[in-house]
Length: 81
Image (cartoon, rainbow, N blue to C red; front, top):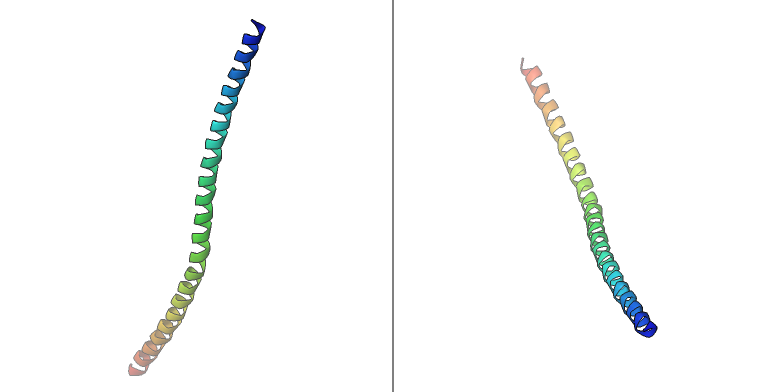
């Protein structure tokens, strides 16, 4: 009788261990997917950072050119008066 009870306890423990292992494995997989997603987002942000810097630089140069053109127009208007 003790032998059967011991076998039952061992089997129950194995089942519980398997369930725990399965749950931990699923949690690890979810965390890995989340981590991969975060890494992808970071990479996207890093790569877009240099593109944004270039865009800012281009727009600043265009602004300077437009300000210079505006000054020329203002000077021409003031001379015409």
